[in-house]
Image 1 (cartoon, protein in one colour):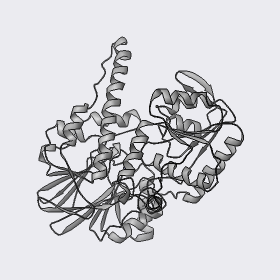
Image 2 (spheres, protein in one colour; image 1 turned 90 degrees about the horizontal axis):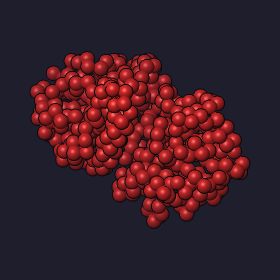
Image 3 (tube, rainbow, N blue to C red; image 1 turned 180 degrees about the vertical axis):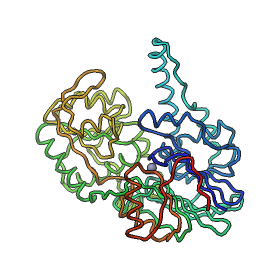
Image 4 (spheres, protein in one colour; image 1 turned 120 degrees about the vertical axis):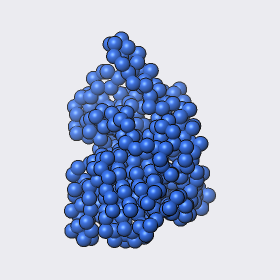
Length: 457
Ligand SMILES: [Zn+2]
């Protein structure tokens, strides 16, 4: 008897949380934060939907907040069992969870100050730093390929090629083999290795973020970056790159380093203006054996894949503020990736109104973010409560995704020849598109998972 219930990332791309019961053994795969618009983030405060004390183990696919962000809630609710993850995932999750606790605390202080004046109740942070430390205490390291015995089942981690440490999970027991994809990476990337393919399986929980979509090839993305930077610098402006701190920042650093060495971009001052991205870059250097082939080759030559003479790391606010005086010839990478906060806001405020400057987006821009507004051609935006006219050139690179596109998802799932595929981690119409292609191209039936609905096999 197998029971599968998705308590998150069903109909949404965030809040990953899947309960798998094989016989009497209950495994929870991921417990991530719901992110995005308010009606989605409100789900973080709803009951989990299951009793964490009945779980035999928690397994974490990777350290992104939408996969690990609600783990402390399990511990608050009395869970004391193991949380299995690869060693790099532990390190990533540590940074991500502590950062999340800090941001929630700061937001709460700010909101309370504001809301108290309006006499409304402000809900406190979901968890504190101490809750995060209590959660990290339960982590147990797992290696790729290692078999872990939990109750009646065996659990193995395969490399998902998505971010540093990312894994897909195979659960075997009672004659059934079940695969949880986590987030599947792409075959077109530098920093982490290609995804490993799963073996044959009966059941697959498959992510569907990019159902119906084909990414631009990586080389084309690099060409666009090179041309954009060259043109903006020649026009006498600065280039701003809103960057996610984890994986995308390292991707962009590696690409800029190569473009610079190949003479495809001018020798410009480049700033990595994000303490979190600086920390994650350092973390990548600690796991050279877990990085992609292109990056490994550079390391084997004794070179640093994420640095070059023109790169400056700015950790402190004071260092960051010095960038404000630069009017031309600088490339500035800063968070957040969707321009929803962080140091990039100051750089946008300083540069967006200048027609010689440029903004290069390197990742998905969700609805209702400043990033999306700029990409959609807004003539004026509001930053720090002040109107800013948009005169800078704005462009978007689609080829740097850490997620498989539809052809790659099909390539990944094909070897499983699974008789039951549940599509998770996708927003309509992506899962519907993938469902049609699974049927049309591979002859595989699938179900689009509904949140909180239990499927029994
Ligand atoms: Zn992810």
